Image (cartoon, rainbow, N blue to C red; front, side, top):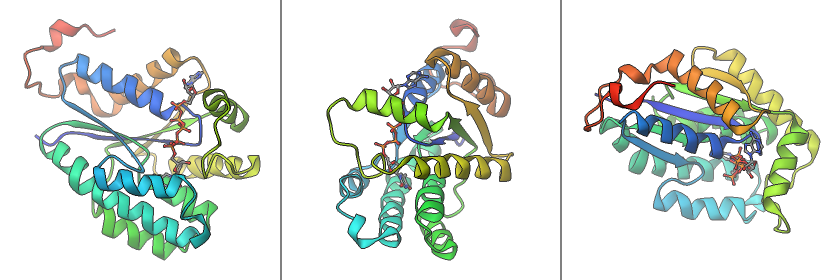
Amino acid sequence: MRGKFITFEGGEGTGKSTQAAMLALRLEALGLAVCLTREPGGSPGAEIIRHVLLSGAAKPFGPDVEAMLFAAARDDHVQCTILPALNAGKWVICDRFADSTRVYQGILGRVDRRLIKGLERVSIGDLVPDLTLVLDVPVELGLERVKLRRGEAKPDRFEAENVEFHQKLRDAYLAIAAAEPERCVVIDASGPKEAVARKIWNAVGARLDPMTFPVHGERRRSEVGAS
Ligand code: T5A
């Protein structure tokens, strides 16, 4: 049986990486096989492109080229990591996916919609997430969290943009979620980590019902509790 594909989306510091890891643990506790991955990156080739993008080395070439590089990374990631895992029956949890290109390059970078669509067609084909969790926090809170975590280190290519950029980012994600309610759930991620994790678990349960997914390992549903 094909696995399930869950993506986490949202602006900087909304807690995507934290919550993706917490969800992975919770699914594993049910005995499910999980592949936790991220973009840009998630495969050896894509991790090399990640470095080029986040260092800012590609910025002088403009948003069109950045969009092409994100798509090239995604193509490698889909072929080498995501599809093999789904075909093996794993639950794939991906920290950012195609919505990030739609928002950062398409809406913020003003890359032509036809180019974004064409790149999606080439890089993901008909692969659509079963569920996209859009983590939402006020911009100032997200940036504060990122700043706290960064300490004295330099902000990356996108963290360095101004507050207006991040507000547009937030609005764009909410617009995608409103346009595709069958795929997306918006999660208010401004509370403590555990409270956010509970909201996510409820959304995953309501949409994908992991408790009924066949378990191939030794642990059975009755053994893991359902708190
Ligand atoms: N990008 C990516 C594009 O432009 N186009 C694309 O197609 C793709 C795929 C990726 C960058 O690339 C851009 C978008 C990004 O700018 P990244 O380094 O992978 O860069 O960074 P992000 O994905 O933006 O992730 P961040 O690490 O900035 O934010 P997260 O993952 O949302 O947040 P997280 O979990 O790392 O948490 C940040 C800090 O907050 C704390 C955490 O402990 C951590 O210190 N935290 C909380 N604190 C209090 N309460 C909570 N509920 C908290 N949750 C987390």
